[in-house]
View 1 (cartoon, rainbow, N blue to C red):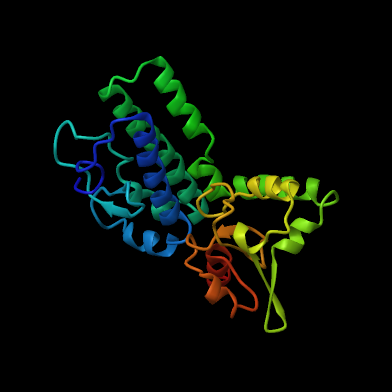
View 2 (view 1 turned 45 degrees about the vertical axis):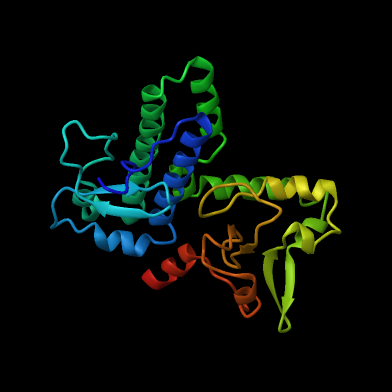
Length: 251
């Protein structure tokens, strides 16, 4: 398939991992923030469809590659046929599991083609293993782990929650400030921030990134993952993440 990796040829462990992260971000976006669009594209009346994640963090639902064998391992075939045969959350979880398997197969396909030795393969796996799986992100396992860590540290340090609050028009919009805007946070606070995971992509907090917290499920997100800028956040009285908004819409 054009755009699924045929035009991109990583050469090192770091480049293969970068390719993995780009595809992973795309798949998570399809199954979380863009879930309604993804759901609509998986029409059971169409032919066998696959969910592709591209290195540029863009996803697409398309027919499988016609080449035999394909240039890259192919994702699970026919995900659209199961859409209406189970509950939406179960279907999304199933797609997430297959997407995790596909990501690993692509990464280690590159590793085999580039003749990575034992140490390179181990290093690549360890880098991948430090990330949350797509299944963990989609099913909320990552969110539960974040909440558990937050509750444990809540009594020892209240400055974390204070540093995350930004007053706007008499209300509070929750947002993690970049490091250069919040010099008062001590080293312990930075360490706790590092344990916070984005509810969309599952990656750790970065001191130079803007974050926002959902006022319903209290999950943190990169602003870029939910398309919220610091300027836009100033005018939001009560922020609801895409997942909570979708739940209310379906209800």
